[in-house]
Each structure stands twice: as C-alpha cells, then as structure tokens.
Image (cartoon, rainbow, N blue to C red):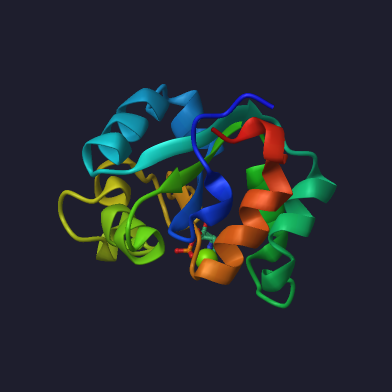
Length: 147
Ligand code: IDP
Ligand code: MG
C-alpha cells in the first residue's frame, strides 16, 4: 500500500459527515474549507449514500431516542460526505468548530451556526469521543482509504 503518512500511530483523529442537506445545498466545499483552515488534515474522504440500515447501524447509540427514526430517514435521504480528520485534540477542537447540536444555541461563526437548517438538519456530524472517532472512522473507511 502506498502511503506517506503513518495513520497507525496517530490518536488525534475525529470523524465527520457533511449531512445530506448541506451536500444538496452545495455547502460541502465551504465546510471542508473551514475545516482545513481550522488546522485539520483530511486523512480520508468520500461521498456516499447511506442505506437506511447503514444509517441505523451508525446511529444505533440513539435507538431509544424519540428522534431516532427521523434521524435515520434523514441521514439516508441523500448522499453525505464522510471524512476522517487529524489534528491535536481533534475531537474536542472539532466539536468547538461545529458548535451546539441545536443551531439556535451554536456560537456565532461555528459551522452549525452558519450552515445548519434545524436541530435535525444541522449540517455536520462530529464524533463525541476518541473511542467513537475510531469506531466511526472504521465504520466508513478501510485502511487502504486513509493517507
Ligand atoms: P451531535 O450530533 O451534536 O453529537 P447527538 O445528540 O449525538 O448530537 O444527536 C445526533 C444527531 O441527531 C444530531 O446531530 C441531530 O442531527 C439529530 N438530533 C439530535 N437531537 C434531535 C432532536 O431533538 N430532534 C431531531 N433531531 C435531533
Ligand atoms: Mg453525537
């Protein structure tokens, strides 16, 4: 495998998805630009249309939540752009960059404040822990897709 970066030694990764409404609105480029400008390195990137069952599996942790079915329907409604991102303190720095889940509570200048449509259609996903970042990265990307 050709790779000039040893991803195996890096622990500071997070996983993101540009969600369907932001892809549809052609905001993916602007969002990725902000992510790179904030110092994140793109380790892996792809556009994919999740099936309902893949979306359900990804969000299985939210199975008991009242919004679970809405979330599955939404996240499988159109293609997303998935990425693994690398930076020191990737998980917490990325959560700061994207802002609160509800865009009404998101700090000005955050990605959700500027691009989210609603609590459900909130432009981007960001992992909530190092452990989940690894699980989510592995869910979407093989080793050969990371550089
Ligand atoms: P997070 O994405 O900020 O980590 P979570 O609580 O993990 O937020 O929820 C996962 C996703 O589920 C949110 O990003 C949002 O798209 C959706 N969601 C969360 N809470 C609600 C809600 O109350 N109504 C509708 N959708 C919600
Ligand atoms: Mg979450």
